[in-house]
Amino acid sequence: MNDLQTLTTFLGWCTVLNVAFYVFTVLALFTMRDLSTRIGTRIFKVSEADYAKMTLEYVARFKLAVIVLNFAPYIALRIMA
Image (tube, rainbow, N blue to C red; front, side):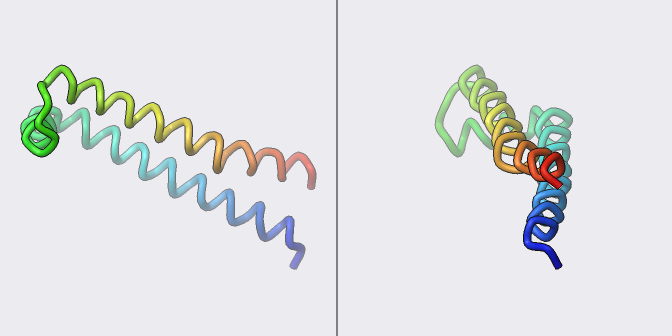
């Protein structure tokens, strides 16, 4: 099997799994917002406003990481093939 083909397949599955985890995380955080806020503010000892900001920053950074580290290399390898 070609090394580039193996790497492309690997990055494709990484993208699928990370997007699924991202969707699950977003749904869990925003459908159970009250529970998440109650637990998170106690764990991190921050206000509700700060916790909401932390949550949105986490979601944004996770999405950016998936795009930069999984999706973009996958697309580049697909173009090369």
